[in-house]
Length: 293
Length: 191
Ligand code: FES
Ligand code: FES
Image 1: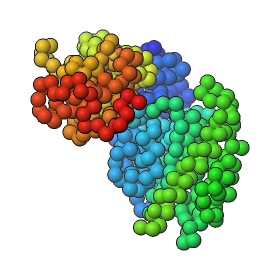
Image 2 (image 1 turned 30 degrees about the horizontal axis):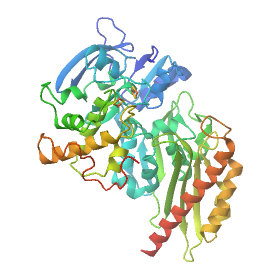
Image 3 (image 1 turned 90 degrees about the vertical axis):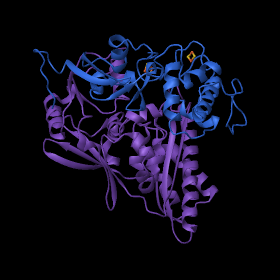
Image 4 (image 1 turned 180 degrees about the vertical axis):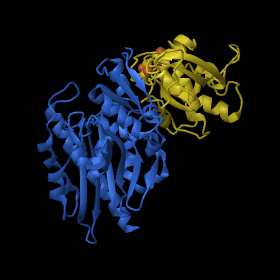
């Protein structure tokens, strides 16, 4: 259970890191918080020629609140998302989901960019990114490009980051003051991977009907998914408990995860509908409270 | 990029690092693939850093890095260059005079085999630093990143609460030893 031998690089700048990525291509892996990568090294699931430790790059550690978005440098620690009042105030759903990532010892090291680039469909941050229409900022030899979260996750543990590119930041839209949000996760134990989780954010119009809605699901497919059918069914409707329960069932068709040691396919279908229903109701409750006050 | 070439040694394979460990500046030459846990145990003889799983699951290797709990098996030694590392050895320099947290674990029988104990004690130190009162349920959450295969956790929770009372009272003397869940609103301890 020791990491294999690798060539260790700890660049000071993004430009140097990108240069190294271009040099090693698929033979290099990027070390951010290390909470997923180091176990993969220890178990030899990963045997890279080169390890690019980006922890010294100070420009990746900034958190900036802009007029419409909050931009998180790839190296912002998950613990900061969870505890920084700026995050809770501007993107409350993001702060809430972060608490569910592993244990606090992991979140002290784990980073925003690391979790997104790892692209685990069971993970909270990718799910939040898809739900909130975050944008990934990716740098390569040709410069920077921006990609929508929904296009960024490309399959099982796969993103669209090219071998010579580095994820440098992620931008989350600032949550409107009247929006309600909810997050519900089912896992075997505190800190375990989600068997299923749902994030929801919505707004209500004057009449109490759903005027905007976004729902994202973790752990039901090879990547985090938007519950497009559930969203479509609820848009323009009064989100009563019954209406939400009925609409939530539509997520079952999107569950493609097959039986594994943790859950059968049919149990996951059941869970997906349950967490969707609960997350939406939580969001409705918050939106109604917000509209009253 | 820091490339210190030392006598022809390839800096991608070996580094000289200096870290503050338990209040002392320590330097050493490490292979870049050496984990922090292995460096602390094998080179610095800080064997309180227990390795249960070596891949981030058990939490027994927890140390404090710049005051924050982290899993030492998930970091490379090379990454603590210039940082502050604390292991449980720092709590008491005198073997006969325990730290109040250690006393609390002893009095409340917060350990059996002791494998998880250094991690539990350090995590207790970290969470109690804010001086806030916690319910048993909060303590349970706070220590959930560290597995204990012996105690069933209840006595660890009692130990944390006892340590909190000792630290608040500023006294290492036994306080309500054996009474368990002081300051708790948990109606159903151990459930
Ligand atoms: S040995 Fe580090 S978490 Fe188990
Ligand atoms: S006392 Fe044995 S593992 Fe906790």
